[in-house]
Image (spheres, rainbow, N blue to C red):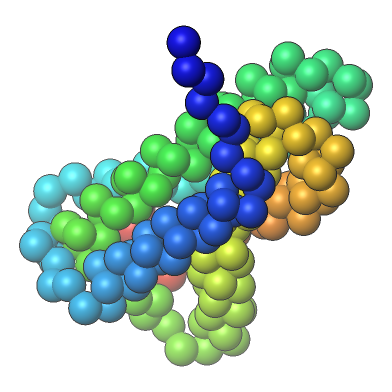
Amino acid sequence: MTQIAAPSTRSAVTGIVAISAAATLFLLWLIYVHPASDAAARHYAFLPNLNAVLNGLSAIALLVGYSFIRQRRIPAHRASMLAAFVFSSLFLVSYIANHALHGDTLYPIHDEVYRVYLVILISHILLAILALPVVLVTFFLALTGRIPIHRKVVRVTFPLWLYVSVTGVVVRVMLVQALGRP
C-alpha cells in the first residue's frame, strides 16, 4: 500500500493563502459589484441576526477553548476550537447568502456614533480578511502535529479571531440601534 506524504508546511500555507485570497476577492465582488437579488430583504431577513449569533458563539467557543488550554485539557481545547471553527464557517456561509440576497446594509446616521461605527467596521473587515488564512494555517499546524509552531502562531491567531468575532456582533448591534429595527 502506498503511503501519501504529508504536505510540506510551505506548500500548505501557499495553498491556504491562495484559497483565502480567492475567497476574499469573491466576497468583495459579491458585496460591492454583484446586484442583490432581494434588496428589499423580503426573504431570509433573519440572516444578519444569525450572523451575529454565529459570531458570538464563535467568540464564546474561543474563550472556552483558551480556558481549556490554560488548564492543559487538550481534548476539550480541541473540541472548543473545532466548535469555534464550525461557528465561523457557518457564519461565512450565512454571510455570503445574506450579501447575495440583500446586498450591503448602510449605516444611516452621520454623526459621532457613525465615526465610531466606521472605525469598528473597517478594522473588523480588514482583520477578518487577515484572519481567514491565519486561522486556516493555525488549524493546519495543529491537525498535522506541528504543535511548537502552532503555539507561536496562535499567539496572533487567538486575539485576531476573537476581535473579529466580537466586532462582528458589535457592528450588528450598532446597525440595529441605528436602524431602529432588528
